[in-house]
Length: 410
Image (tube, rainbow, N blue to C red; front, side, top):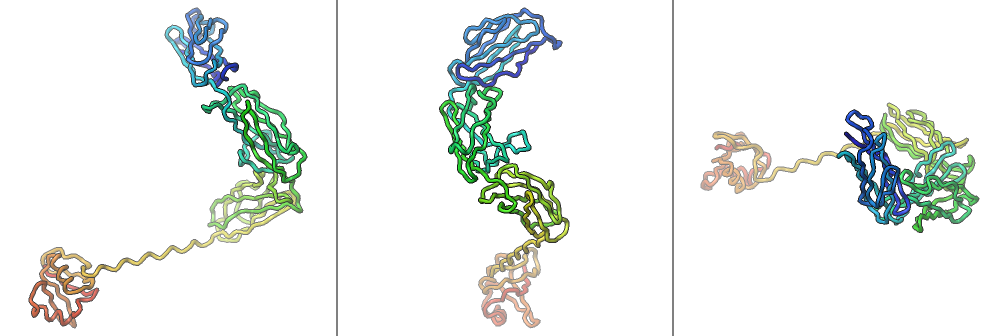
């Protein structure tokens, strides 16, 4: 009635590496089906190998459904890289599983990982591919190595190695998940700190099937309560606001302290989400929430018996908003207001010559404009003879000024 593929190989080597893929059938009631039906398996890539109950030739197998309804085949790389599928069938019920055959190693990547003395877990360094963290006796270090083919597929069956120069920087310790397989796609090469002095620049060259990559690191010093330094980075802020606060710790030579160095912070007001952290690439990171009122706050950091402090201002006034730009002056020769209806329409004249006034009144559909000078009405009629507009010209020899109230008759 149905079939499923169990978790199996998803990536195998080009030739020698191989993996098993299984299919499980059940009947309509979810039980193992009656055994004895014909089972086939076929693939478009790689080679299928004889397994109990099946007879295989190159890319196909035939056999009978066993008790329990589970059939397993072994897939081996046939010398051609790429994506392939294997299909199992019995009684017209089929199921397909995808897998990958990887090519030869084209590129090898390596990133630095660290492990504090109190931790059993490796984590990526803050700058894992070009790290400058202080590798010393306070922190464990390792290189996580992944070889891939030209198609970006992880290559199985590879056992990477590392060479470190100068040799006094560190030595290769245990190598886990080697050779690399379908279930362990990266190998971890543990590094053991050597005898090199603090500040020594080191290069780790990782090799996997003749392909190499390099990772740079330094030897860090240990913390001294008298000669090491702490630097707190914190900003002035508004009240009741969260921010990131960092403490950078260096040894007596000015080098970033080794990962895993414990740092404690204490505020005079406000609160840290957590007051304890350890350094990563010499920096311990905290989240600080400022108090609910304006004040001066002192933050103290503690490493061992050494302290450092930083003062910040809470509740600083925001910068004043810029004054709004002045509104542009209305253009001369125009009205402020509208001439919309028959009769008298009051408007404000924005200044201009009599010729501009004539144009504006006519464009508005008006027949005259009246202003009041000394309590007397003075009328201007566009296109009228000069004697008709003589009183207007006498009152406004250069044209009515901006702000003059006019009654436009339409």
